Image 1 (cartoon, rainbow, N blue to C red):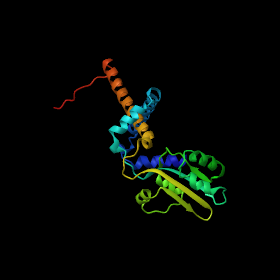
Image 2 (image 1 turned 30 degrees about the vertical axis):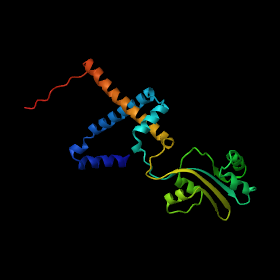
Image 3 (image 1 turned 90 degrees about the vertical axis):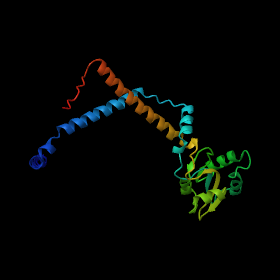
Image 4 (image 1 turned 180 degrees about the vertical axis):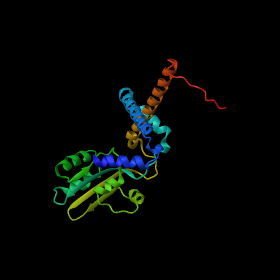
Length: 221
């Protein structure tokens, strides 16, 4: 308490009158907090969060140039197995998905034996995230993706199986399925801005019609 009082006294002595006049700063800060809280409550109550697939498709089609990939993405199937795992020979066939029921057999097997696995063939992943699970060493990602389909790697303890189902290169246009969540956020943010803009317009118009304020022309003489 004493230290606080001493610091205040020191500030009073050393600051100019302009810098000591913090009332306006406090009022501006309070006003900003009130407006922010009001806008947040308005958005919570009024924002339409339902986004149709048609809206997402339309946003993507009209602004494809804004969805350029910053890195390499892939659709993959991968499996990590202990070297002592039984029936490894079958895995070398299943992970290539040559037959219709191979994926189902592989999934059942992985749930029983795999140290780690990913077999959702519809999901896009960053290639860098895949290389965190599969010890791939490459300095040329583009060349690796173009030249490899099935990859089998082993280290002292594990076998790794990778099936590269599809890929998109860095600087390509990102696929819609990879951007859906991003596009939803873009649409929601646009709706928020429109809602707040309309609210400000309504507040002004209502006050003007009710003559809650007057505008005086500034004398320029």
